[in-house]
Image 1 (cartoon, one colour):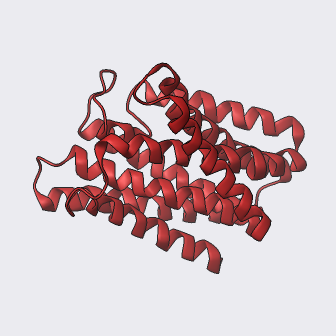
Image 2 (tube, one colour):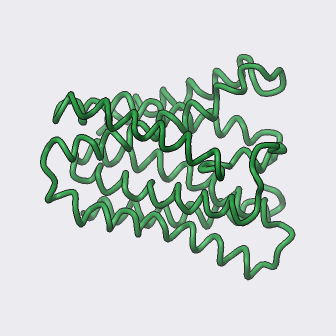
Length: 240
């Protein structure tokens, strides 16, 4: 639980740091944000297929697939209402979702499920927790950046309040998940883990696949950024 606590603290700090980035001399350039997203996608896909889903399959193969499918369907359905993972809104215009409160609500829900995923990973073992934690901390930076960029026209107090709400959603989700994970039967725990893995697959794929058809965001640079994310997670897995 010490490692989980440290991951949660870093996740909250990463959200706040990402929120400060647009304020400090535009540290993160809008034009290059998609490369960070491609790198993050590589990490999420590697964590899903290399750590989370195999552990769920080991516990209960019959339930693992259904858990991952449920996550994919849930994320797809929810994103038809509000963007669950809208960090791309900071670097390009979106013609599908209304921004503002709907986007903040989507980010809150996304952060809450990040916490649930972390709580489940904590009971799957230290290597899985570290891998999921690394992926979570990285995309908390993008979440914070998105909030501050989307709310650049609002008062600083309102931006800080939105950052705090989204940042605290992750510990709340983790505590909720931890409270029930230890009491779950293996098949139910496999469902929970697979749901986490399925959400990682959806988010990672949704970030990079649409960019294959864009000249400015595709090509070797996107592939290299994605591959770097995969390589980073593979290297970390060999070290832990």
